[in-house]
Figure 1 (cartoon, rainbow, N blue to C red):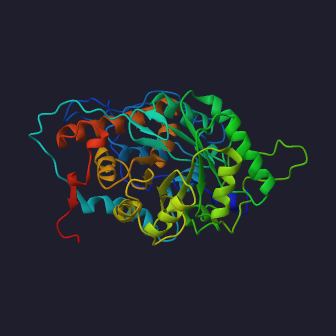
Figure 2 (tube, helix red, strand yellow):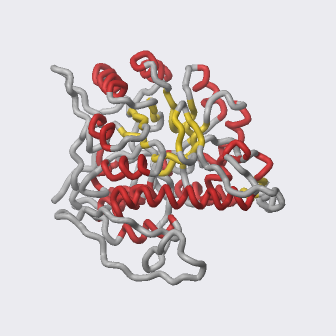
Figure 3 (cartoon, helix red, strand yellow):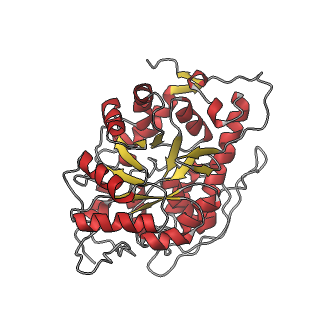
Length: 408
């Protein structure tokens, strides 16, 4: 079967956290496995007709870094290439990982503090720990149930699910798939009437905030996907189609001339907090505040749009210094460890977002797999907080990190 790669085929969210193909252990173990325990084998996960995974089971995780290699064994070829790949030479995707290791943690081992409280509040929603699931398009290429396992697993873990306007389920179906708080991410359509419709529907469905992604004027050279010309594109029917009589809008037909007027449109039409995503400079962060944004999301689209752009962690210190706490800061890209979450918070972030790890969790274990991803990261963050001597999220300050030797 041949096909032409179009905008929908290549689009996946910047919330998808950058990763590389890292060899995994034979199989993952229980979260609380004793030190030195050996991996055990397990039956191959189920796959539905068409090669898409259809699992619903608990998965045991040693490290989130194992998930990609395990998921690759069962994902459809296009789905795996689509999720795992980046733009161009994938330098930015690798940089998302490398930039964390330019910072070391300054622990207070004699703090006298014990159990850490990982809970936090963001834009009025209390969540179990400061990590959310990023908006991810085209989850139908990952598993049979598309967005549903990610919604359910994220909400079961006690955190926020961000729905993409290029999802396979409608925004209303996503809103009812799990009980927890949700934000709606809008790729602003060319059709202004359809943009307004989506915004009104999101507010009516109970979404707590609107995310506007700014870096999709054009789709980049995502070469892993392009090389799969002739592969099947499974389960990618758009979920958000017009409901207004006479509307001809298309969620995949996006504006290529984004401006701050689009942010204002979202604010006017919904009255909800608006988050601007894909900001990577102090100047744009300050502009976002001036235009009424309720939060700034630092992201390079998971290394999937402009290759050779900076990582969010590299940009974070200067953005935090410019904003001075006026609005929350969210970051994504390269987050696999509790140490990564801790360092992001210490450098000025209020929240981090996960993408690819939740997709791999969905492929491997459905909703239970996604919940396991969040639970593992939360437990690892609590461990780091205990060792570092920080009793709660607010206590994680800039004093707890410094540049690693050899990095200026």
